[in-house]
Image (cartoon, rainbow, N blue to C red; front, side):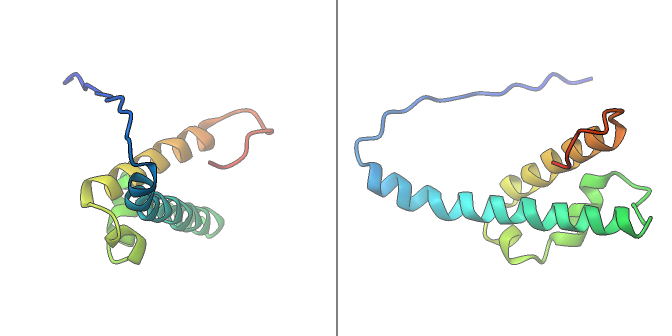
Length: 102
């Protein structure tokens, strides 16, 4: 199994307005893509029609023409859907009835 490395860069931007203007649309699209993916997963669950393949692959295939998917760089959109699929799988496998969907 390959090791994965996460790198974090801490910055102190001097022009907060410019950074906000550049980041805000991407945050919006990522949030809306998460919501669209969650809706799709809940629809599949309600209809007892969860795909037999990996959920992240099914979500990517289903939502690749979504305007919020296209509003992000492809790797960013894929990462959002992978995170959602992982959170949803954890929620499905949970034994605690108090857990809420991701």
